[in-house]
Image 1 (cartoon, rainbow, N blue to C red):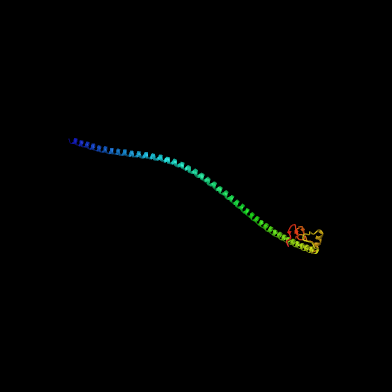
Image 2: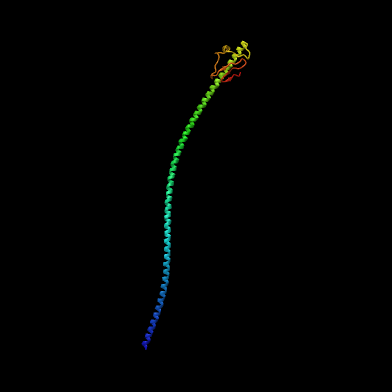
Length: 208
């Protein structure tokens, strides 16, 4: 009887321990299931993140390729601009040299023109001076001719409307020192009537 009670107690103990073990196993199973679900969600999230990362990497690679192409195009444009700038600088230097040469030539021509103008002015002044001197000499000749004509007419008793003949002109010339003068400019003298002043074909009529 005592042994039977002990055996029953042992069975009861084993049963209790088994229940405890079973309860602990169930809890561990539940915890494991929860952990499994969490791990599964984490794996799914990881896969989603991986897909997004792949998409991002693909987009980034495309952007990198585009940026490299744009950078290469920009480098080519910069090189072209540098070449254009060098060409423009060279052309500017050549143009500056041409302008300097043109300016020097223009200055030289201006100096030559000024010199020619000064020479022409001096020549014109000299010619004018000579012309004035010739005109004055011609007027003086006409004055002498008129004085001689008036003196001859007074002695010969000629009227104002009388026109001296060639022989008369020879006689009138005798009243002038050195004979009948000639125009220094090559003009031809016209004695005219006694009452008219003599004239020159170049310098006009003598006005006493």
